[in-house]
Amino acid sequence: MAFMQIVDCKTRSYDEMSRLMDQWVEATEGKRTATHAVVGRDRSDGDHYVEIIEFPSYEEAMKNSGLPETNRIFEEMVALCEGEPAFTDLEVVRDEQLNKATARRFFEDIAVGGDLGLMDELFAADYRGHDIGKETDTTIGSDAMKDDVTNWRAAFDFHFALHGQLAEGDQVATSWTWRGTHTGAFMGLEPTGRDVEMTGVTVFAFRDGRIQEGWWTYDLMRLARQLGLVRL
Picture 1 (cartoon, rainbow, N blue to C red):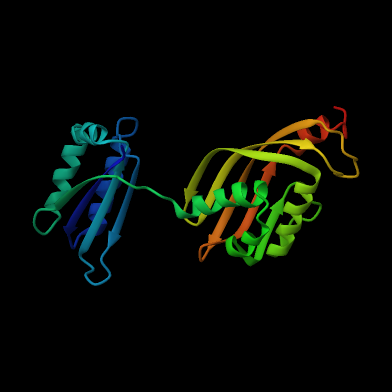
Picture 2 (spheres, rainbow, N blue to C red):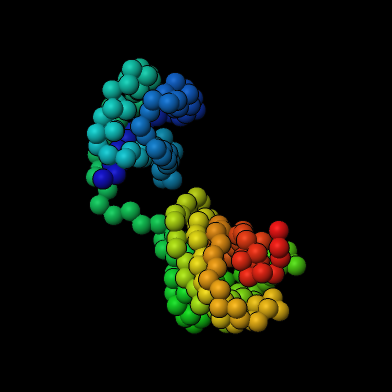
């Protein structure tokens, strides 16, 4: 189970403290077990800071605390604080990246499930799409995305296997494998009944909870070879 430690302190020497944090990151390279760290400043009190540090587990956090570099630099950081820092140890009981869930809904409910009514809920009206399979670099509008989904569903009976998702800031990257059966006209080719597959990565950028922009990268040449459109 993931574990988080919250460090709450007051300091008038944040720049010096930040420098010590950089030193710790460099000194513990290859040894630290912390995976993510966020520092926030209180808007109502400019000297009040909160650091949230994430670990894979409590046991890994204890290993991190036992590093001599951690102890040495932490003592220097405490000396910059006004009073002793306060610590809160948290076992993570729920961890949900909401934009990841929205991206999954596109693949599962719209692309595979065919619920095109969800498009206006999940996509911004001025959505911009970038697709290596298109002649033009950018398509604009959720209606254009609806047309794409409709055309692929008309040509193939398919499903997606989602292998993993990474979220950073307002973007979510999803790695997938697409498998389908060619049941309708595609790129001028009449149905062949062939089973085909390709892999790809889709990156969605979000704004106000909706998908604002998308980048599609996938092995279209592999699909074309499987359908007999090219022979390489």
